[in-house]
Length: 270
Ligand SMILES: C[S@@+](CC[C@H](N)C(=O)[O-])C[C@H]1O[C@@H](n2cnc3c(N)ncnc32)[C@H](O)[C@@H]1O
Image 1 (tube, rainbow, N blue to C red):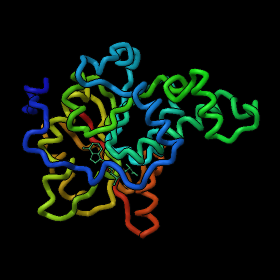
Image 2: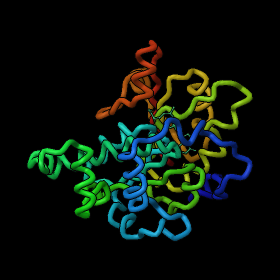
Image 3: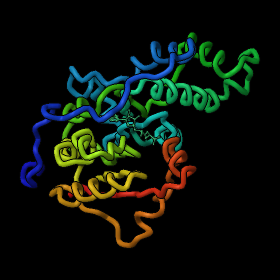
Image 4: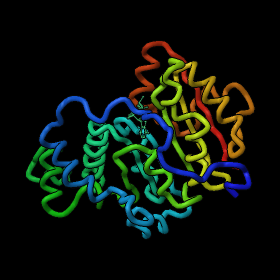
């Protein structure tokens, strides 16, 4: 199917420039370092193995498995993982501080879910409760079995995913790289769209958003010209207004505070 449509199935990073700006910023707190050390390995897909070393996960969520690329601090991913326990999620983000923020948020929500904080856990704060729960063998990975992570470049992950395994792909506010000389760093371009199309099943959705006019123009042109994607918009409100059950991200709120308008794109995989 992929080849019939003229998509390249040639994965990998050849000729593709890095699309993210940084892997880390300020030093993490000891609590967040602990989360990364203890929880991240339990959630991480191992690309050296078929199905990321976790065939059972891909089978369990075969009906609805979603990937968010570049989740930043994880607001959207966290809300979805908590809200939809029957749906599988893979989060991909090379920015360590963002991964730590997501894990901290999930641990807090997991503790709330289990009622551990309500029971007091000796009246400890959220961080102490989290540490205590982890010592007792509980943690993000047991609270949210519907989540896996890959804390690195999506361009490494995408070719390793089984063909057609995804129902939804989110690319929310990808780094804009508005200057012309940075065009090769943009994710919304032909070569990367080929890589996105392969693991997305027929009828699956590619959803992206941006506040950067250059990315609206170049992203739309690339997606509309791609044989595997068809734009679902029928009327201006379809790109002016957020889709139903949208969760605002940190980057989005910043853009809105600065008075920039947001463009919402929903493409269907042919
Ligand atoms: C502008 S930020 C937006 C973050 C978040 N989606 C939000 O809306 O707040 C773009 C994010 O995409 C991530 N990113 C860029 N290229 C990526 C890639 N190739 N694979 C995974 N994440 C990537 C960056 O690390 C950064 O966190």
